[in-house]
Length: 115
Image (cartoon, rainbow, N blue to C red; front, side, top):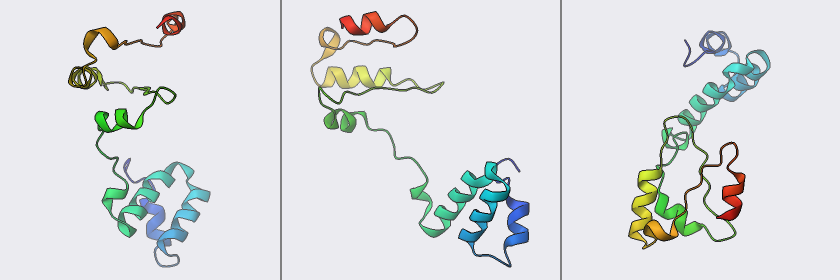
């Protein structure tokens, strides 16, 4: 099973080791299966909320930022915070005149330096 690749290993170890010891053995034998096993362990011991990322709140992130600690978005395919960013900019009175959006792809360094 792609979601829990170490299940066959866990079935063999269940009688001999506790859950944490099983993760240690898993790391030695199947390092590719450690992350899902650790997630299962944390969910069982502490609760599912400890393995789920919190919802993204741009306004809270903005309030935590300063001129020396700016917001930098590192995006994954399919992620697009621009709508939320423009909405927050309008809400805070930055609008089109103060907000500068620069995509830091290849050849964009000069534009970033001039901004």
